[in-house]
Length: 621
Image (cartoon, rainbow, N blue to C red; front, side, top):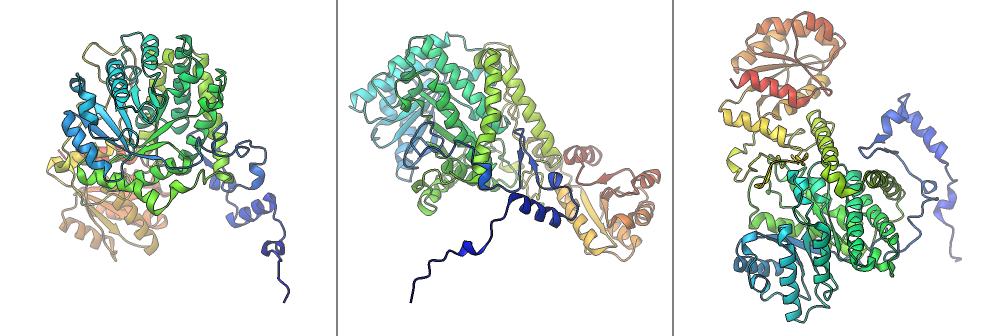
């Protein structure tokens, strides 16, 4: 029997984009294609509902392999990223014991957060005692004024242990932190101090000591293109400073480490990291390094705190899982998963274990460490990569034209732009244009959280407070999490000792009353109110009587738009002011209902937060 080599797809004629578009428009039955299916991103570009090979035929992003300049497909030929866990160091021996414990639980990268009081003679030896410097990546963050002392102590320890060629790690020298967090400039000469730190590590080739901490921007509410654009101009500021101070371009670039955030926008974050490597390589190339390898971007990714929530906190695990997947697929060098309970307590052994295991699952179960740039060639991801790169590059050029990153920080322009984005995102959360599962969408109706809150920022999440040595010189990042407004609202309800009851008066059209009672239940549960749902009533009076019997504080009429014209005035009159009366929907007869004295409506265009604040003001007196 002859072998059949006929290919299956040869049986099907090619289908053009125009034909696909015509079919989609037919299925839309008259609905506008652009309005219905095209998504306008916060990054300033449109995303189409479908992409084809022709969309990437002119793109250069697929012209290189992993490990090849401009490194869009990765800086390595493997994808074995480091799993990092952060350790707050209050006492060196305790931190050392914890480090050795977690190194036996899957971690191979340590992030020591040093308090100023622990930096003393011999502290590095105490902290790293018994840790194999060749096998574990070691990272330090500290006060920028302490960075040189930490650097010298670490280099001396590395040399004493003959690990200058095998050591991998970083020291987070970030003197711009004060301007970002407090609006106050760093008091020392940044350029000369940075150059001195770089010179101090000359003998340790894989120790990066100059930080670009754009995760600060991400956690303060920056959009993806903003984080990337500002990260690039931040890195360029360092390249300019260091080369002006006499450091050659190769050495300067090899000492810079990017610490970036990663949000839950799955594909956009994959594209962001790919675009970041490509653009950074081109920036460094302009400084004419001797080797293209100096153009490699070293990136550590930390899952977001901006979208973490106190209520329904286990949902934070879902968010951080997709975030760490984005970072892993994008080929970052190391990842920290933020423990799910960080916003209301010091993470404990349980939450830290879950955070570690989230990355272990990606390696040991999903094998993401075995495939380099799996998103490469995807019509969608390649298009997103170029689109994000274009928007970030526009921002990069604008900042450079206005004097560069440091000058823009001192003018407060960077902080102002991020704060405006944060305000916009809070507004979108308030209107549910941006969803936070468990907070402004589908909340856990009966959850109480006040008693589990053990830690709280002194300024209740606002990180623009002044430091100890003076007032605010320029605007600082506010950095409030997206959920803080809803959490404050719900905690107000919880702490008031009174939990308002919301009664669903469901009547009329079956499909509409069910849909609107579900919508209304989720709406009012965002404030922590008690929800009393019902299967339906035969008459308005029957529903009102049941609501009064249940001692309802709010009665929500749930029916169809056509029936509201008669049912709403009847229900409003029968209730006679014994509870707040709300109509679920925005019917055509709204003006007539307002004329009848009905003033409260909830629907998809409502500002959920402001509406619930108004109810709290009425009901929690």
